[in-house]
Length: 386
Image 1 (cartoon, rainbow, N blue to C red):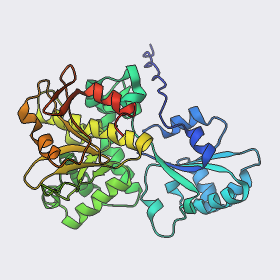
Image 2: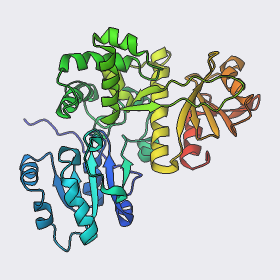
Image 3: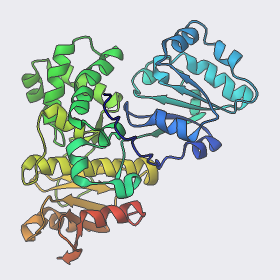
Image 4: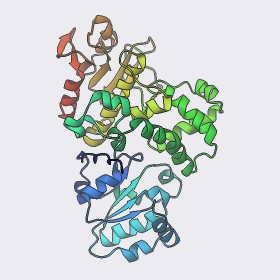
């Protein structure tokens, strides 16, 4: 008797409207694997000609003769998609020519910016803009969103709806990530990179001590710097810069680093994020970082930072130069929880000071807004914090 197949995953509309983007200009669409680039193309650009460079026959044909692209594209092809363009950067010369001579709009997808940044690669001289596709966010999922589910398995589309999320996450965070990096030609030392990856995950959401990471991963300090750059280039890691506009209290200048998905962090660390533990607060912070990154890249375009003074006050997120957000994974906020926000309020620079938490209703204390997490996210995505 054949087992019953799992039900199909629901179709979740994405915020990025690919057809609307391409109506204006060609675009690079970058994002880690399994964020849904191919799925979005199939549902938004059904009439586009698509070249998948993960298909060996397509890759070999175009690598042997990039001019074949111009030979195959006809007058009726107004939109052309090249999937995983970083596998064949030389093809961008042909893309450039077809944009100029025939006015074709290209969508050029990739899971890495590393090879596209290497010397001599034609980045189309402003003829294509860059957009990023991230895992699901709360606005996209709507009624399908569940915070505990998101913190337990992350927001990568196939894993959020998976029948066996733990196994899928282990496969993604283990073999896949290492192979992805090695396929980029960035490193050939898989054991060293595997050790580093776990240590880096344990540094998620922190100011990284590169010497300690090097010691724990048993690799040179210079290699640790290189590996962090690889994670950023392959879009697996975000760098959150320090906000340096406070005057009364001297700010730190070091960045913090967050992995792109909380489920991947859990798998790399080899643990679950249970409520009431410090790790749960870290997971919640990583989730909120993801929401803010999505909002920045899809809607506002404003910079995102964090603030920490040399005297030890710290605020999780600064939106633009107008809003401070301190996150607390608790349901009862007291005066001690607002110390850093009060210290930042003395600067008289920011318009809004928020403590985002699990309290059931909004309130104000000492001029600081205390907001339940759903209230904050609803207002964020509605554009109130600009």
